[in-house]
Amino acid sequence: MAIFRNKLDQRRTVLRPMHAFGRRPSACQTVLQAPDVSQIHALVRWNRVAWEIVDQSRNGTTLNGERLTSGRWTVVPPGAEIQLGLGEESIWVAEDLAPPATCLFPSDGQGALMALSPRENLLPDTQQPEVNVCFHEGRWVLEHIDGVDQLSDGATVRTSSGSWEFVLCDDLESTAENPLAMASPPPVEVALHFDVSQDEEHTSLRLVAGGKSVSLGERIHHYTLVTLARVRSEDAQRGLAPQSQGWIALDELSRMLGVEPSYVNIQIFRAKHQILNALPTNSADAPLVERRRGDVRFGSYPFLIEGGARR
Image (cartoon, rainbow, N blue to C red; front, side):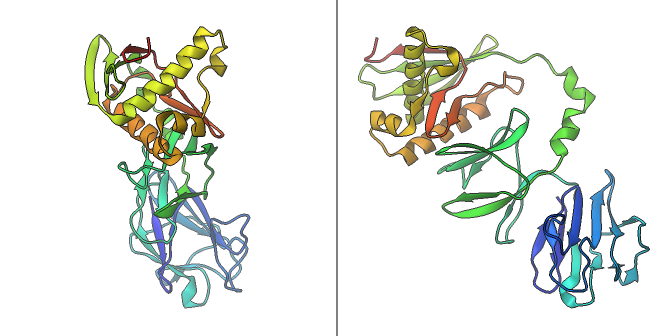
């Protein structure tokens, strides 16, 4: 995740695999305002070995004080100073030259980048999660209290404690082309077994995968899952089609549980976090909880509910 830092105002920009600097907002990832900068002044790209730059301008680009030959790609060395115009505001320093990777970058430009895991990235943290960024069905999405949105490059991810810029790179596509991935073992099917106390006050959960059972203990968020699983089970018994089973408005679910919708949202994220981290690495990639605008439902994991006041 390479970073260029402006020498004058210290703002930072994260490089995409092909990154344009210039005055034209529709064509450039980093927009420059100086009048002597061209519409597309210079391009920086990752060639799978190193970062390199090419001048596209009328007024020229310098690398460590030496003017680049127009149209010729030149490798950018660590700590290099790149000048894209005549003034000091046009000087950029190669602060980091790591390979590109999809990540979150603090909107204020301060702090470290957050490398993203395809399965789960809870924000602002795992204790009080408000949103989740993950890779689902071939795309990056933002899961939040109101539903799921697709993330495009440059999108802003917001929580109550801050915001991040979503930086989209093609690293996942490269991974998908890796022939070793095709040799992975077949996925292990996972089932969820809930044990609910007679007074409905305590719920424990076991994961059953590949003939083995793993206890996840007793948690408040397990009862949230049980409630969703019961709704889906009741819809199945009524004969609803699978695509229609289990959907319930988040507001209604919060009334059933006697808590605020924001708290239900946190419990869902906590449940997903605990279960995803307990799953075998080659487990089937099934959704635990699905969302659509304002609604949620238990996903497609097989489940068994034992005990409880409801029979």
